[in-house]
Structure formats: C-alpha cells, structure tokens
Length: 187
Image (tube, rainbow, N blue to C red):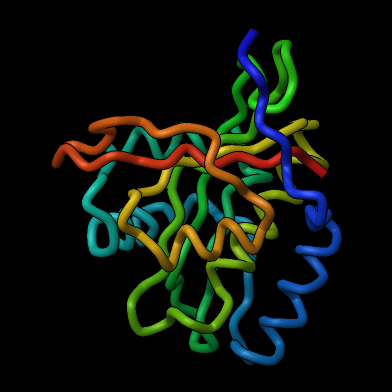
C-alpha cells in the first residue's frame, strides 16, 4: 500500500501564521495592507500575473475564482493604494495527500508580488490570509500548490509555512520544467 507523507512535527497553525504575518507587515512593510480582492482589482491582478509569471490565465478564469472563492482571493496594497500582489485559490474535493480518503483541499492557484515590493513579507502575508480563508470559510482540511523546482525563494517560503514536497509533476509547465507539488494539512 502507498504510504502517505507525514507533515512536519513542528507544523505552524494557521492562527500562528496569520499572527506572524500581521507582525511582519507592521515591521517590514509599514503602510502596506492585505485585503480581500474586489472586482475592480481584477484588471490589476491580471496585469501583475502577466508581468510576474510565465503562466497566464484568461480573464474569465480570474473572475470565476473571485466569484466562487472570494474569501481566499486577496491582494496586497502599497501605502499609496496600488495593488502590488495577489493570491487566488480554489476549493477541490480530491484524495488527500495526508489521509486515505476524499478531503476538501484548498488549491493555491497563483500568487505573485511585483518586483519592487518583494522581500517585505507580502508573499507570506498573502499566504497567511488565504490559508485562514480556506480553513475558516471553506472548511478545507489541507492545502496544496505547484511550484517550479528551480524557484528556491518560493520553495523556502512554502517550507516556512509548513508545506512539504509530496510529489514531482514532471514537465508540468509549458516550457517543460518540472513542478514540486507541495502540501500541508490545515489548520
């Protein structure tokens, strides 16, 4: 029988991650805020996606995720009121990474922060708010994401949040690069 991966023993809780994110925002990103995305933000979110990531989606995809999963779709706003980052998620019923049965899983579909606003904890904060929304609003039992195997800064961030590599998706990206599938149980 296939053996399910074990989460780390020192897995941080969603509440602990959320608290730390708000402390980090005050210390490393004064004036920035994380808030739920509004429909008016979607154009800027699509622009950030195009400028920051090689994987882009059609406009209806962003709107559909915002309509269906608003409590897990957040933006980072700079002190001057400009959206400089986002995270969008969806909820899926699927076989669990940590349990041998179907679970409600929060899929981190896309996260990006503009170049000039990185290294301030905004990615961590966006993840914290999304994890809280996936757990509290949608009752997710776990969360997962895909990340390029060469994206060391993102992998380090996800490991700080308690994610572990559960499998490799070979040739996942259009350019042929592999992805790590990383997951963690909630809360």
